[in-house]
Length: 294
Image (cartoon, rainbow, N blue to C red):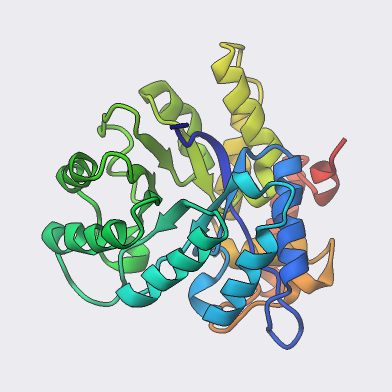
């Protein structure tokens, strides 16, 4: 079984002016950032505003993704607050031969490791051919994975619980499990994570940093001197001064105005903040033009 590793973007979703999901452009965007350097993309995650998208649109997107030229490079975000709806969406994805999932525990309710193990156990028992990347992001769901919880899940389901996206950053420096992918959620953690044994990253800003992140990753693998990591971290740190989703859509909207469409309560940056973002990126010589595939 291949280990999930490399540079993954938490891919953006593209919406029409009526806020319906533009399925074709969402797929095209995912394919484009793979062309720019990502090993793959996570679709229907938090960056993709997945909790704001209807189930029917998600199913339509999965059907279109099944004919993508990069079908084998997608992680499917199926995490929903409803256990049964999560299982149903996983079942649809599995019927289309998508078996790699990125799943966050439910939001809103308070719970502990015991309940988390129960939640994922029911997912695995319902969809036993799944490979699940746990999504550790306390800021969004209110729960932070412990090392002990991850170890328990992997011991119970070694073929199905295959990795963790660590956006709370309490795991990647300390979690050591054989044949298990630890993927921090920020470019600034990429090189340090690789040095500690991480498998790569899954991040929002790889929508625009794919080429830089891939160079850092490839140079590490071949033991070449790092020349892009400082730039990569500086770009990430610049975006982090703002809401990442708002910043990415505002930045990309100068390439295509369709990126201006976001689903409430998400919003674009104010014009002042957008100009600040672009000015700071310009100082780094990082522009939309620099994202073009050569």
